[in-house]
Image (tube, rainbow, N blue to C red; front, side, top):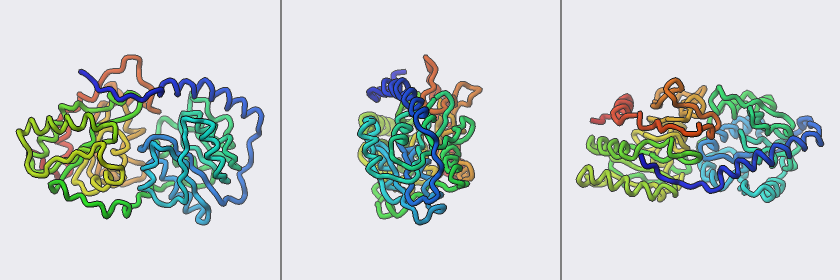
Length: 385
């Protein structure tokens, strides 16, 4: 099959430089400075959250637990331009600082300009997060010790990252050095999108999110022909369909919508709305929240739908749903979520940190049938013919 190309220039090069340069620097720094004791007085806390939107949403769960434990402290989130929109939906922190994470010196300078007593780095494998924490000026630092990543040397306290638990539990473990048994979910602020009108689509409607991002994104996407067939079945059953996606997805979303129109030989009024590349995350959240159900690949939109507790069918291929899926430990989302995809024994679900692809990876997402998705939607009492 012909797969689309969505370039992420320099990603592989940056990852190699991060390892080749970051590891020896961190190790050398650990020899030059001793581990410090946790401050007795904690008045300011920083959270370095430098990953994509899905990770950012899950890592934001720490805000609620920190706020409970330190009600008078100032909480600063250090984010990036790639995930900043996630924090428009989150409540409980005091300040958001955007960090140019691909420019190490500028990133360090930006964080140092906002000194904190405790700095928690939520990065799992990039060494740049650990370097920023080391030079941040914080009085005490916490971060992950991730197997084979050699990034933990210079933290004052390192927490072992586990490949056997959901990533939400890994993030929660970062608060254990502070004596906090973290249990909170991401503090979504519904008021931020409550006033957005979602009536320009036939009611009721379903949201479809076909697009992934990141390394080998194409291996985590369902075939466009399957999305078109699913959308047609939904529209024929009397529902509206909303297509969501980011700015980089517009070029493929338009042809998908045209194919849906072609198959149906026209459309009932207001039955199809394409938001891909046309709506920000807040508007997307509003449409997710107003929907009767969501079908999505494993991406930030999937996590957002699950956190909003919408009926969700999550399509997985190489991504391990036990590590990155939309069913969260200690949360009541199980009844609202169904995961479809191949398990480990079938050749899928092998990604841990997100880049562990074999040399010639096999495309697996086409093994999920349209009928399987429709059967899953019916389990949510959605009448899809």
